[in-house]
Image (cartoon, rainbow, N blue to C red; front, side, top):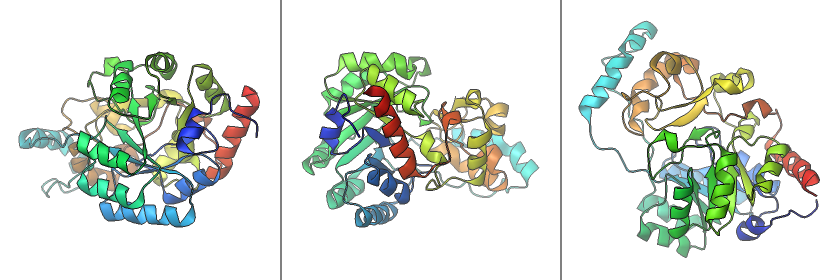
Length: 352
């Protein structure tokens, strides 16, 4: 393989190709991380949906299989305040679905949880010492961030606006992920909850590159070599790719999600807050069409998902979050290693 025109991320993170396999809470497995590493990319393990023991087990598996750099990703949201009335209104809105599907409306509502980065998570970082630690929804409080940096880890976080990128650099990020609105999964916005601030990657990326001095990683709508080349042309030092990896056999997705990824059109994805309470991009399904993709009744993140669990158990396709970016139609049924090498080789051939 030839030489990449910008090697700052390669040098900073100790990887061979400037591709980061996105840390998707839905879909990522240790096998995916290991395969991405072996292909020379940065494999990323999401932690937000795992218990501390599950995270420790996943990292043990990865470390036993590979000594290459890894990324562990954490959420930095503030836990929601108690709002029983809002929770009850949300469940009442869903009652007709409970009745239709035969779910027990009167049973206690399951708990939907996403743990923010805390002392226990930081202890895992200190134990396993991943080479990269990335965050979503900003950064953790200063003392925790200092402990992460003391391990030698490089710190990344997602910016959805230029203002967020500038903030992240000022607060210690070693590189910034410029997240365009095309990206699947949760929006990383944290300085504002106004969706009108969210713009496309190829408008956001060059402005972020101009505003900060640290390397910038492009994310959102990149699914093949052409997207990688375009991102480099606009100043990116690397790309983060998510949806393309959901097509790999290493991905852990439900049958409904697997089918939707392969049959939905790019125009069928939308930002929605219904499944968690925070805006995230997924493939439109029954719940999104009938309640509206963004509905103010949804409880604050991550509580919205609890009342949906009994419905998902009855109808996975209609009531589960089918996360996907807008470039889903570029997806190929390749294994993680082969996909990563193909993306890198084809992009480099176009760049040199």
